[in-house]
Structure formats: structure tokens, C-alpha cells
Length: 611
Image (cartoon, rainbow, N blue to C red; front, side):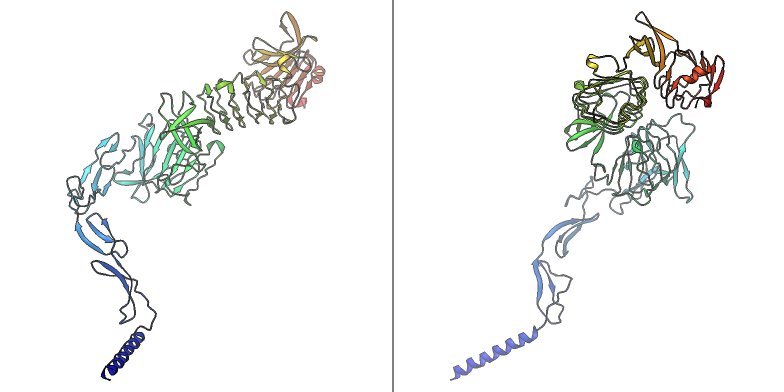
């Protein structure tokens, strides 16, 4: 009986204990955000008073940590720290216990540098004069400013601007360094047009103290291949890089700041690539990596790399001896050179000859436009690799006397040879299916030979807008449809009709001083031919001519025949005024000439009476 009573009593006590426990824990736990810790564990306690529950109870996981003074172990979860001790540096300022290396906190101006290391090293607060090697301090890397630069105190009285070039300097160095400090104060401004027109400058170092680059600061610096703009620059005014044809801008900022009111596209040939976040990135906005290859003995060439291939990039004006390669190396890899970029050698007056290597397939728009001294073009593999030549690629190359159209080219682009006034003959191969308008505009001496028998459907209506003579089916023919073939007599190019014994003056350099005397006849191959017509643009752009002498044999004067003879003041005609008026004169035959008078046998006619 006693045993039974004891069991019942024990059950009652157990039930009471359970009820009390259930009442005590009847709440939702809310855990404290801060960690509770001991030497081995961390956890979160419940915010309820007297609640002994905890959360995230776990053992510490330690990693090593350091700062300039100490090293310690720290839990990655709760931040618990143990074993914090000061570094013990050896003579190389490396901690013998944790291998932390102390780097001096260094400051400098244009004269001295000093350390701000607190109690870490005994060089704290000492001031030491710069020690230079190649114009750079070997301790603090301060760059010595280029001699001859002039610095002016800014209005704030606490900083300077680079504002000019000293008159005592005959010529500025090619690699310019703008000083970071001047007379102990930071240089913060590059003044307007400071380096404008300095074509021979190859590089300009912009220090990290610069905040403002003013209008036209580097305009016309044609030799600049690249420049780095530090994060400190908050303002760039307009036209800063105008005329910097081959420059690449390396910007340390990740995007264009609001204060950079710069016209990135002044015009097409001044448009340049920009690399944002340049400390961590080398790819420009257009997807290319640009670099200057300086390994060869010849002058350096600038390249761009993308998609495993290289292009000849837009060049700074530093190259004299152009030597293009079929491949180029960059960071240990070899890239085939396949194209010449738009405007690559635009207005490059130093070029006299160019070998287009056999790997080139594309020549971009205006790639060699206005290369006024270019007279020799050699096609690798006879130009068989060339698939495309862009708009105006050789426009205004006035020294070219001949041009061979690559055999695999199918399109002659607009203005491709526009203004090439020195070319006498060009042969259009049968592979050409398209010729765009104005392809040969202004080619005043040009005779066009076509392998095909007639104009093709894909040719533009103004493909021959200058109305140059055309010989069709030229492989077995040397005569135009109207019976003329072309011959050179001395410096004069003529179209002769052997049946009629007549000649057309195509172009001549026969100018006696400022007088152009067009004879009545020409002797060729023991025959006398009457000169009966002056072809389109025959004397165009001869700006030194003041007088033109004509005979009554002349029956027609072509379009633009005397155009831009700006000094022309007299036309002497050995016939009557009635005979002069009877001569057929095509559109703009006397465009932009001087105010000439036509002197005839029986009187004179003013320029505007010819209209």
C-alpha cells in the first residue's frame, strides 16, 4: 500500500513540474542582435527576462587580422578577438610574428617628402629632399615638372595653375610632366590653350592634384597617342582635345562626370576612343584595346585589338617611316593585322609611300584622306586580300599619279579618289559591280578605262560627276565612243580623233608664267590636229593664271574648265565678239574666277556679260 501511495505522489509532482515549465516558457522568442561570447563559443540570448534559451550557439571560427600596429585572431561570425599583440618589426619593417609589412604613409611637395607613420618608425615627420632618377624621386615617386612650364597662383591663394611656356625655353620637351606641386602648393588647374598647337609633344603627365582642364588646353597636340585623366579632375571644358587625331583617353573615373562639358565628337576625324575606369580596365568604349607598338626600329605604330584580330588604329602624328606589319604582339599573344581604321592616317602630310600588307582586308573611311605627299601605294599580294575600301579613303591625295584598283574589290565608294587631281589613268576591272556617286569627283586629269562594255546597273547616276572621258571595253580598245583616244604631248594630255584630225585639250601644265596659251593646233605622230575643245576642268584650280589665250578653232569649253582660276583677269580671243558668243560653254565653266574681260578683235566683253 505504501509503495502505491509513493508512486501516485511522484506522478503528481512530475505533472506539476511540467505544468510550471510550460507556463514559464509560454512566449515567442526574440533574440538579441548582439553576440554573447566566451573563450570558445558565441550565441544570441532571448530578450525575455528569465528566459534561459539561446540561439546560434556555435564554436568560434578564427582568422588572422592586422592593422598598422597590431595583429590578432578574430572570429568571422561574432568578431570575438583574442591574442592581440603589437607587431615586432625587423629591419625590413616586416613583423616577425605575422609577416605584416609596414608601408610608409608618405607625403610630399615639390621639394621634400616626409613620413606620417605615427610611432611605427623612427622616420615619422622627418622631411627629406627628393632624390631623383630619370626625373622621378626614388623614394616617393614625385615627378619633377618639365622645365619651361610657367605656373600662376590661383585666386584662392592656396594653389597654382600651369598657365604657359617660358619665353626663355626654345622648345618644350616631347614628354611633358606637369608638376603636382609648385612652391609647396598643389597645381590644380591647366589653363586655356596652354599646350595648343604643340605638334611634337608625345606625352603629357597630368598629376592627381588637377581638378580643372580649361578650354583647348591640348588642342592641336597631334603627336599625343594617349593621356590619363586622374580621378581628381572634375571639370573639362570644350575643345580640350580638338585636333588630337590619334589620342586615346584613359579616364580613371568610371563614367563621364557632370563637369566634363567636353565635345567628344568635334568632328569625325577628331573623335577618339575613351577607356573608363582605366586603373582596372584597358578596353575602350568601342571594344578595342589600344596600344603603341614601339619594338621595331622604325617609328611606332598604334594598333587596336578586338575579337582576336588587330587593326591599324587612328595614328598620332609621330610616324615618319611607316612600316606596317602582318601581325603584332600584345601581352605575349600574336594578332593578325586585318584592317586600317577610319581616319587612320588622315591629313598625314609626311607620308610619301605605303605598303598595304597582304593581311589587310579593309581600309576605312578617309583612312589616307588629305595625305598630300602620298605618291606610291604598293598592294601586298597585288591587292588580292582587299575586300573593302571606305568612303573618301584616298580623297585629296594630290600627289598620286596612278592608282591600281584591287582585283577582288567589288565596290568603289563615294569620294574614294575624290580630288586626286594628279591621277591620269585608272582602270576599272570587271569585278566592280558598284560605283557610288562622286567616286572620282575633282579628278581633273583622269581618263577612265573600263573593262566592261557599258555602265552597270549598280553604278550611281553621278559615279562620274566630273564627266571624265571613259574608254569602254578597254582590254581591246583605246578609243572613246565618240572616236577619241588619249595621248600625251609633253606636259599636255589630249584626246585626238585620227579620222577628223581634231583634238580636245584634256589637261595641261603648259603655263608660261601666269599666261596659259592654248595653241590652235598640236603636232602628234607627224600629223597636225586642230584643238577644237577644252575639256571639263582642263585648267581648273590653276590659281596662278591671270590670262588665257584662245583661238577661233575652239568650239566648246567644258564644265568647270577654268574653275577656281581666282586671279584670271583677261581672256584673249583672236576672233570677233560674235564668234566668242557662239562657243558652247558648259555649266560653271568660269566658276570662281577673277573679274576677267574677254578681249576680242572687235571689242571686249565683261565677265558678267557671258552669263
